[in-house]
Image 1 (cartoon, rainbow, N blue to C red):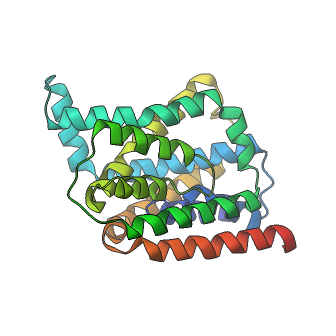
Image 2: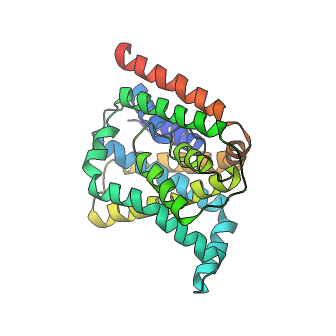
Image 3: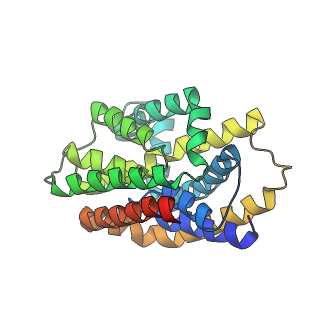
Length: 264
C-alpha cells in the first residue's frame, strides 16, 4: 500500500462512515481495487484506525450533545443524560461480546473477500428498503430497543453490512423516528471504537513502531478531515432523505462486487 492509497482509503472511510452504505465494505472493495495485499489482521487494524478517525470527527460534530451527556453523568443522579448514557452502554454489550469472543474469526473477513462483501451489501440494501417502508413516529429509544439496536450493530461488524444502515433501519423498524435513530446510531459506536483502540494499544496489537505507522497516520488524517467535512451535511442527508436511494446504491455496488469476484 502506498501513501496515495492510504489517503484514498481514508477519504473513502470519511465519506462513507456517515451514509448507510457500509464504510468497512467500501474499504475492503477499495483495498482490492488498489491491490492491497495486507494480511487479514493488518487489514483489520488499518480499518480500525480509520474508524477511530471518523469516531473523533463524530465527537467534534456532536460536541454539544457529548458535553451534555458528560455533564449529566458527573451530576451522579438519574436524569435524561444519565438515561441516554445507560442506553448507549446497553447497546454496546452485543458488539463488545462478539468482538471479544470472536476477534480472530472476524479478522478473516477483512482479507479482501469482495464476494462476501457484495452479498452483505445486498443484505444492507434489503434492510434499508424495509426501513424506508416503515412509518415514521415520535417514539424514543427504550432500553429493550437499545439492546436490539446493539445486536444489529454487532451483526454490522461484518464488512458489507452498514453499521449506520443496520442500526438506523432497526431503529426505524422499531418505530423510532429517523432523527433520534440517526443521533443514537452515530453516538453509540464511539465508545466501541475508543475501546477497541485502547485494547489494541494495551495488548500490543497496535504496534506504534511498525513500518505501517506512516501509512496509518496519513490514512487517519484523510479520514478525519473528510469525515469532518462530510459529517456536517451527510448526517442531515441521512435524516431527511429516503433510505430507498441508499438501498438501490448498496444493491448496485453489491452486484458489481459479486460480478468482480467472478470476472475481475
